[in-house]
View (cartoon, one colour):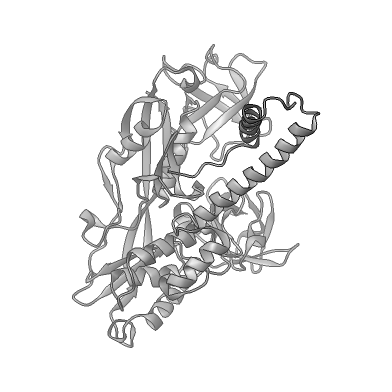
Length: 499
C-alpha cells in the first residue's frame, strides 16, 4: 500500500486529542493558549517527518524513484548502456505551421525556418502543397534543442530560403509542446530503467536493440524485428514522442540512428555488409467513433440533449466565433455547455469545444475558441459532457503510444502518472506494425475490444458502442520489395458522443 502523509490539520487534531487524554487538567481549548501553540509546532514537525519518510520510501524503489534518486538508479543499471539521462531534445508538433502561398506551390521536409527574435532554427517536417484555400498546415520540428524551442501558438517563423510561390512567414497554429526538454523526463527515464532491470543486456538480443535505440536523444519508442528480412537480420523502427505524423523520424534521423546502432551491435549485424536496418515509418490514419451512455449519475450526464438528433452546421464565422445552425438551437443548450463536431463536409477531429455565450439569434452560439478544423455547412454538432474529453484523451494517448493505467477515476495516461506504483496496465500504447504479435510483445493493431475497455473502465459510463473502426485495424507490415518500410497507426478523428 502507498504511504499516506497525514494532513497538518489531521495531525494537529490527533495530537490535541492525545494531549487532552493524557493531561486533562491542562488548558488546550483555545488556539491562543501556549499548549495549543506548542502542540501545533509538534504537529508541523511530525507531518514534515512523515513527508520525508514518504519521499524516501518512493526513492528506495526504482518504479517510484524521481529526481536525483532516479539518476542514481540509472547509474547502477545503466539502461541501454548509458549511465546518465538523455540530453536535450528538439520540440515538434503535428500540423503546427500554417504555410501560405500560390496554389500548387510546395514545401518539403527539411525546408529550414528561423525564429528571428531568438535565432532558433526549425524545419518543415512534412511535405505540403498549397490547395485552393491558399494555405496548408505542416508539421514543424526544431533543429535546435531544449525548452527554449517550445514556442507558443501565434509565433512567427520565417523561411531561410522560401520555396517558389511560398510566402516567407509561417504562423504557428499550435504551441510546439511535444518533446523540447532540457533533459530526459522522469517518466521516460524510469521506463528505460525498468526495462533494463527486467531484461538485462545479452550482447545483442532483441531487447538490446530497443534499449540501444532508446538511449539516443529524441527517441521515445523503439521496436526490434528479428529475422524479418531473413535469418540473422535485425530491423529496428523508432519514434519520437508526440502526436500523429510528428512521431516519425526524418530520413536524416533514420541515418543517424542506424549509425549509432551500428557502433553498439555485434559486428556480424552492425558491421560493413551487416544485416541491420532502421525502417522508414509510414503513417496510416485510424479513425474512432464511440457512443457512450452515462450511468445516470448527475455529474456524468451530457451538457445538453441531442436525443432527437444532432444539430447541423449552417455557417461558421471565425472573426466573431459564431456558429450558426441550420435550425433553431436545441432548447437545452446553454452557455458553458460542450459540443463536438462530426465531419460531413469537413475533416473534423472530434475535439471538444465550449459555448461561451448564446447569440442574439435563436439559431446561433458563440464558441470560446476557434476550432482547429473550421466547421462547414452540413457538419453535425453533438452534445459534449464530463465524459467526452476524458475518454477521447485516453484513446488519443493509446493511439499515440502511451500506456494507459487503471486509475481510480478511469484511464490514466502514463505521461500524466507521477508514479506507476500500485497501478495496473489498462492498455499498452500502439507501436509500429506487429501482425499477430509475431515479432514481440508490443501491439501494432487498433483493437475494438481495447477501445471498449477504455470507455467502460471510465467512471460514469454504463454502456459503450464502438462504431468505428468496424473491425480491428492493423498497421501495414510491408512485404518485399518495400520491406524497408513499416506501418504505424496515427489518430484521424476521435469522436466520442452520446449513445
